[in-house]
Amino acid sequence: MAEEGRPTRELAQRLTGGVEVLLLWHPGIDSVELSLRDQATGEGFQVEVEPGDAIDAFYHPYVYAMGRDVPHECGDEAPVRDG
Image 1 (tube, rainbow, N blue to C red):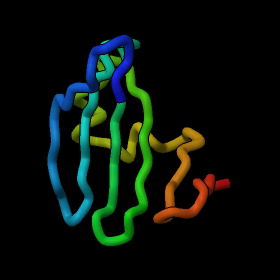
Image 2 (cartoon, one colour):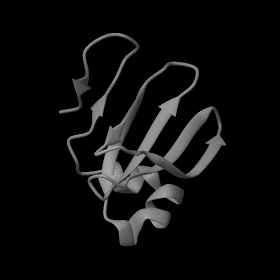
Image 3 (cartoon, rainbow, N blue to C red):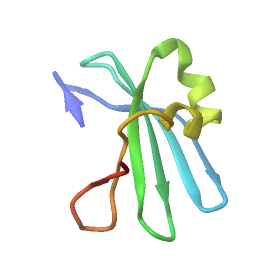
């Protein structure tokens, strides 16, 4: 994703138990995104986080996803929302 000619920047990346966690900054819109993807199933989600919470969210991503209507992607299927 490139906004206003400024590409997304990866701030941090880790792989734990087959789950890839990325912390991304979109400078064109000054937004920080946490992205998780299970490498075995392809399922994952993205959630916007406050810049001041970015590192905490990176290390505790499920806490930041709890209580939010986070879409889970299942391969090439349409996103499914937990209810």
